[in-house]
Length: 299
Length: 172
Image 1 (cartoon, rainbow over the protein chains, first blue to last red):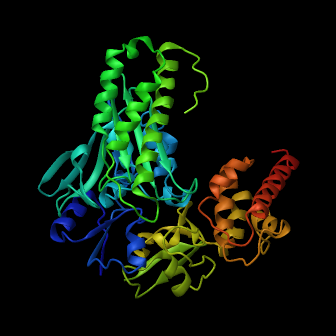
Image 2: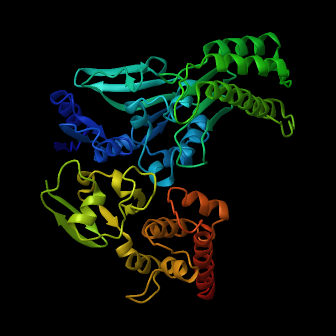
Image 3: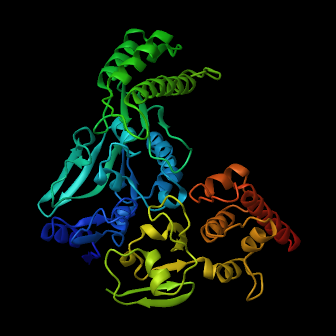
């Protein structure tokens, strides 16, 4: 094994071009587990820790450019306003020690259907900035996950950043696990309301071969909100709308039975999380846009 | 490969390090610092928690080469580290959080203790009067199979109370 330690992004790209099988390592929270357990013996490890700007983020007028290695801890602490869904998901990642090291670039690189960052990335939309010596590609998040633990990266490409639109409305994230910490999602759901475009987007984790959006549920809810004039009125949503949204979200799942949960349970739980996140986000939207007191809503 | 880093304030060097080796292995097997414990090797248990440039991390998930040139604090250096930071205590004395773990009976088999001490010390560094929720959150990455955690929570509360009492006493 060789340990490559590029001191700059350009050096990292050159190293990846020369050794396309090199495994990038930043926080190490996935890669080191595989090496410790002898599941993987890459010929080259490509250490990205010395490239400082990977751990930085920029908040622009419309978007956040989030460096691939920005630790989840920083996202939780600093980007709660701009990226609320991702910040909530970041807070559910493993433990403080892991959140201090791991970042979104690693989640994308591993592309596990259970990665906590994926549902909010799908719900916010945005693009992955992938780069090689051949140039930069902006890969829409929707096109990034191509199979179980497979992503759209070419062998010579590295993830430099993700570009995410700043929240224009409430966002929520919900995750089912056996504990409040240190748990891989049995399944997870993210919902983002986008009042500017009068649309909603979703993301489902751990309930299909890849992270997926619940497109039929999004289309239904977008139409229901528009047809009922809910964005303008800020009225409470009829239970029938929440129910239908939940059913369609459950229907978007294509889960498996495994040790963490059965397919049937996952489908059910995704429906429950869809209904709850809709309740939370809609109450928050009403409170913000219409100054309603809202009150505690039972999910 | 060779790895050079500062561990507990002293420059340490390890030679013939395998490229896939973890910082934990280097500390324990090459630098003679067995305080950080090797248990799960997958970041689940927190027994190997150390500070890397001040940040609590699982040493089992840091590649040895990633520690090159960086600053590591292990439980062996915790008392010195706390003394320098807090500007109190005598050389050879335990760190306040170590003393509190003993006084509160928070140690049984002791295997999880080094990781918990490093994590708890870092919590109190950030937050001198943590709520129970803060303590649980900060220690959520450290597993203990003996104590049921109650005495550990007691120990952190005790260390916090003593710290607050000390600074109040100093008029700080």
